[in-house]
Amino acid sequence: MDVIHIHHPHRYERSSFPPQVIALGFFDGVHNGHQAVIEKAVSIAKEKNIEVAVMTFYPHPKEVLRKENENMTYLTPLNKKIAEIRKLGVDRIFVVEFTQMFADLNPQQFADDYFIALHAEHVVAGFDFTYGHLGKGTMETLPFHSREMFTQTTVGKVNNHGEKISSTRIRGLLSNGDVEQACHLLGRPYSIEGEVVDGEKRGRTIGFPTANVSLTDRFQTPHTGVYAVQMAVEGALYNGVCNVGYKPTFNNEKINVPTIEVHLFDFHGDLYGKTVEVFWHSRLRGEVAFSSVNELIEQINKDKQRGIEFFSR
Ligand SMILES: Cc1cc2nc3c(=O)[nH]c(=O)nc-3n(C[C@H](O)[C@H](O)[C@H](O)COP(=O)(O)O)c2cc1C
Ligand SMILES: Nc1ncnc2c1ncn2[C@@H]1O[C@H](COP(=O)(O)OP(=O)(O)OP(=O)(O)O)[C@@H](O)[C@H]1O
Image 1 (tube, rainbow, N blue to C red):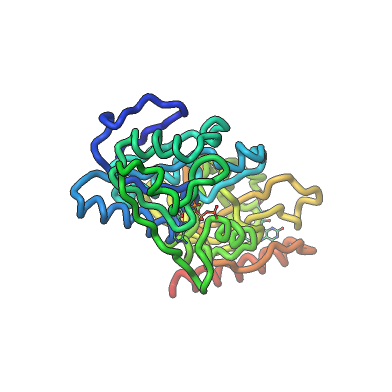
Image 2: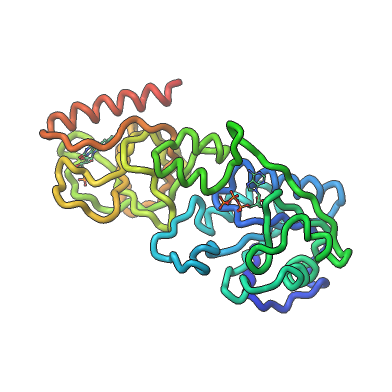
């Protein structure tokens, strides 16, 4: 799959690419709704016997338009999003840098430069997709802006419990710790990527060595608490339990970001410096300030037991 980064204004012409179906959206999370859009594009491309591309944007429009750049996190930061889209079998992905100048394009200019000039023969997007300045272009206006150079398919709303599956909804679930429901809407467990770094090395003294995972990209961390997780290390997958939080039993002063600490059930070895992926399966409980270390140890033993039971099901 080719990854093509585009900065507006670009110089591509219709002859720069083979005729293609283009699926469009921001696609943060590449959730079940997004997958329906991209899979539709893939199947139409097969029928037409032409190539298929995804067009996505980076950074998030909110960061550019509302200048919320400080705390903006993603379900799938760009590299992870590209990796998930790759699995769906597309030929290329256009990553359009979302700038103020790009946001200012009127819908006709958008269609000219980003559909017609990139050789779209057919465009696929969800029912609520918008394009151009202030989102004035919609799936209803698209035929008018196509100059009869491409056709379109609109994918209907993909729901879960009667409500649209959306990136916003999944972000809300994670910030409440509901990783099970997030998994249902994503179609896979939510995951974050990081590097194992030094902790306070207290873990092994209390009988539970933990890998402290420092995020390597702008992933959203689930709500503080204890979870049953899996961790991928160098191609192998291990089961474990994870604490996200501030370790109030030990720290009186809150650090400003919660730590992510994973205790693996069957792993003995050195993880420092390794790149890992943590998959969030089930929430076990909230983080507690215990009045003694022994109470904490007793509770972690129970957490571990529940984690083992969860994965044996
Ligand atoms: C499954 C699990 C549950 C935990 N629950 C809590 C908790 O409820 N409260 C707390 O203060 N620390 C909790 N911890 C964090 C421990 O305090 C921490 O792992 C220990 O202090 C080691 O920290 P270090 O790796 O920074 O040395 C938990 C850790 C694990 C692995
Ligand atoms: N549940 C869904 N059903 C059908 N199409 C969807 C669904 N969610 C998103 N899409 C479509 O997928 C593409 C990407 O959408 P977008 O990135 O805005 O996702 P979103 O989940 O709606 O995000 P947000 O929560 O930020 O609004 C668009 O074409 C959009 O219309």
